[in-house]
Length: 258
Image 1: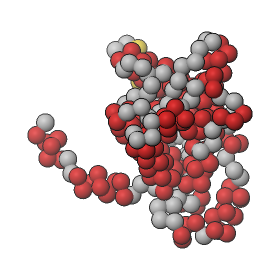
Image 2: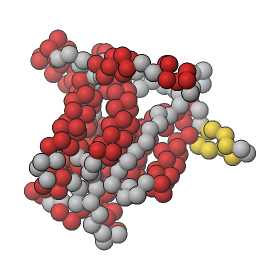
Image 3: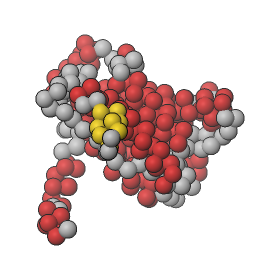
Image 4: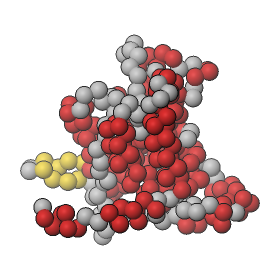
């Protein structure tokens, strides 16, 4: 334990925060700002939350605002701690523009729409949800599929567990341990993460030719600090092919959702 405290260095945390890419820090700042604003403006949570029976033509915005709003400080803290490293990795891999497009559009609409469909159509219920935990499990599922391609199983005793199932196991554990977590909401986020990693919805990403044109026309790399361009991505547009020589383990993190 003593060595753990010795290794803890606040400067490393500060350095890590200042190195975060542009879209990651922007989304985290919006999440924190909305929670702070919801303290004096009490109706803000109700306005942003995903309430299945209140989603209509004029309230479709809820499908994009609900991951940004949180119930309380602990809800906010755990989600931000879990989301930040996963989102940073995603942005480093796909670039700032792609991250912005997906997390302000399809990555809210798809899991949110699926949740509304299940709640209203199958369960005839109206359970309100909010919080970035749906994004955390989306990203965890995507990482788990990548890991599965390089390392299909891990062993517990005499059992071989598929590595892609790790997020599902975590969702089930959290649903039992933490009150008021949305099992269905987390599963919807994981489902979208799986179909993203399996390339079924990669068509949602704008063509790279268009991204390059926008970046060069607006000189985004030169004007915006911490911007990750199409040419600067760590792993290429759709990631690297898995290898058996360098297995990657899935990212982990606690998720606390309503």
